Length: 166
Image (cartoon, rainbow, N blue to C red):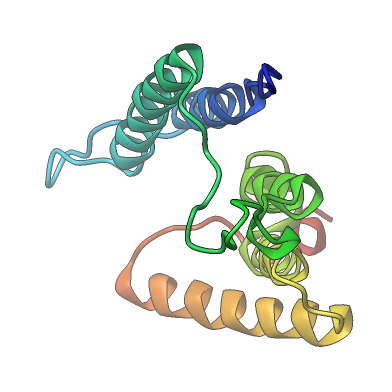
C-alpha cells in the first residue's frame, strides 16, 4: 500500500499572487483616470493585478485541499505522466521575469528596448534558440508600436531616453 503524499506546489499560487502584487505596484506608477475618458493607463493594470491576486488565492485554496495539478491527458495506462506534460520552472520563471521587466526598464531604456527584452525573454521561455533574432524582432515591433502610438497622440515617453538626456 502506497501512502505517499504528493508534495503540494505552493509555489504556483505564491507566484501568481506575487506577480499580481508586482502588477499592482506598477499600477501605482501610472494614472488611474484620464481627464477625457476617465480611464487611465493604470486602471487596467490594477484590474489585472487584483484578478491575479484573486486567482492566486483560489489556487492556494485548491493546493490546501490537496487538488493535484498534474495533467491526465498525457497519462499512460499506469497513470504516469510524461516529462513533456510537467511544468518546467526555469522557463516559467523566465517568462514571469520577462513580463515584469518593463517595471524596471521602461523609464531608463525606453519602449523599443524594453519590448526587445520582453520579446526575447518570452521567446527563450518558449524554446527559441536565436537570441539575436528575437532581440531584433522585439526592438522592431516595439519601435513600430512606439511610432504608431505616438502618431495616435499617446505618450509612451521618449523613444530612447538615454540618448535624449544629454
